[in-house]
Amino acid sequence: MVEIKEVMEKNPSYGSPRISIALQANHKRVERVMKVNGIKAYRRRRKYFKPEDMKQEPAKYKNLIKNLCVIRPRIAYATDFTYINFQGSMIYLATVIDIFTREIVGSEMKSEIYTIFAESQGVKISMSAKACPWQNGFQESYYNGFKLDLGEVDQFETRGELYEAIFRNINYYNNKRIHTALKMAPKPFFSKYQAGNKLLRQG
Image (cartoon, rainbow, N blue to C red):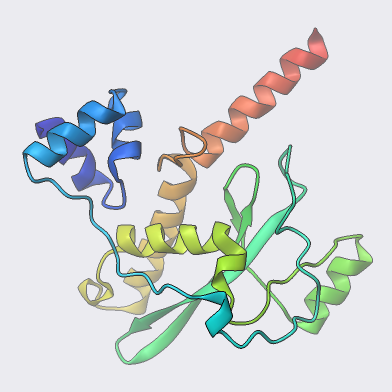
């Protein structure tokens, strides 16, 4: 129980699957201990959308990744942005995530200059329909955990403090935060993938 609470204090967005991985413990045992001691994982209220209830506007580009099976890093990326309400003004955080490693690798842009350059480099641009967040689950999942780990923005007195916390949060996500599908953080997963490929080439 003490170990579970310590993991949750350091990693607010962790539920029982990630706690189990962090403690290298049986998942059912962790769930049982949490239930007996009334320990609940923190959860943000999520908005649930029903596709049939939403007016879907056609996107400028087709959605190329919804049925894509990515088998290696650095070939397919998901981008999106989220809003952070800070001291009466809205801050936009935009990110690019490698779909294979789940690593945050840059900032999202949709400007004409950016898309023209991307297409000139052979990049295939894909978009989900407007107001259809379920079509971009990679980013939706990331932002849910990101905001939980970041905490209440009222704790920061200046934008500088908030920006620093955002940077630290992304660094934590890439290097330390366990991703359930990967069983580890994105960067260690990428390093493990590269090491495995190197051994295969040498063999």
